[in-house]
Length: 265
Image 1 (tube, helix red, strand yellow):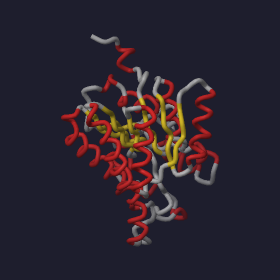
Image 2 (image 1 turned 60 degrees about the vertical axis):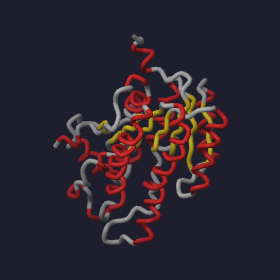
Image 3 (image 1 turned 30 degrees about the horizontal axis):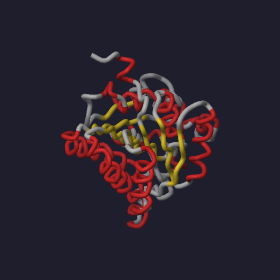
Image 4 (image 1 turned 90 degrees about the vertical axis):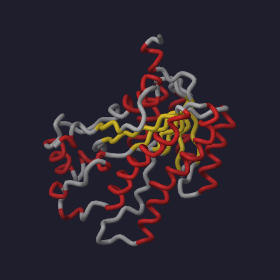
């Protein structure tokens, strides 16, 4: 029987985090590093990823930044191959990146906007998972964590949003629901290889909103959340580290809800 501390440890693990320097992404990357993993931070701006990785290395952690365009098949395959060639394995993939450039309300949606958005936020995640699975399957192990949203469990509560903001994007809600379905599909398909696929549905987190013209929305959100607070930068770290670790060895196909209780009512 292994000690619980050993089960939670990520020492020696190689992790890829897409969008790993953004709002939740920076915390995810840091949290995995803190638990002992070597983290590959990947997004369209490889230079900025490497800049953040450098700050992590300065703290004594193992991290690198690489370029990844989830809308480009060659870029996806190249990233997976580079990580495998460098480290000889890929243990963890966190599908966290979100491209918001083509978010659109239903009334203003066009086929091109919807296709461009899904190309990255859904199809890109599927194809990156495909590329990483190529290296996980022979090892008969691995953990894939999809970052959905509370929007992947409900829909925007439209009365809480001021009319001046316009409608909430139809493709964000749709894509985040799809991430939950993708999780279940991959968990069912690759469980025989002991590759675990799970999902996290986080609640709102954007420190900048508190001091912006949208502060009224933040107050409404907090007042209608059971825990009565906005998520902070540490809240995502534990759930990701848990699902990435052997402590979650018998958990797959699950969606861990991290929303302060928002979706319970």
